[in-house]
Image (cartoon, rainbow, N blue to C red):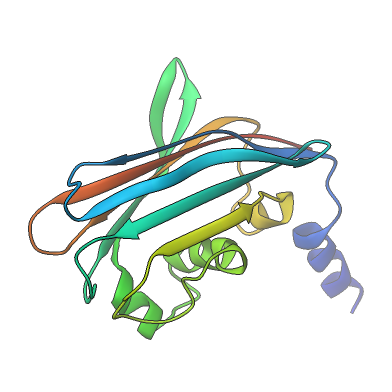
Length: 173
């Protein structure tokens, strides 16, 4: 019992430091398919920065979308680090699997978005006041530094249609 408590504190314990968003950039490669009316960071309070993204889908309904997650770490420029994963978004939402990397990213963004159902998507996608918390990185502890998370979206037929770059800093003890 004593060991179980110690192990749970190791993974859940209190941390001292911060995880914060530093930059956000959204770009559409196919403006006939998707545009971004809003893509900005907003100060929500002292030291709290939230991301707001409005993805306007123009060719509805969306029945298939491939999403690629790539993480980069800033050393001398940004270099690929830890994840480069492509997933078929609709399939993953229909059959969630806690052992896949996509599941952790999805559950981190889910409370802030309207992406709470499987395909088809018939309306715009919103992410409102999404903040980063050091508890989000409990399962995947990252060393201190600057990072970039790239989300690339593909319509599943032609090629990559949009890209969202999320820059953040981690300074957790």
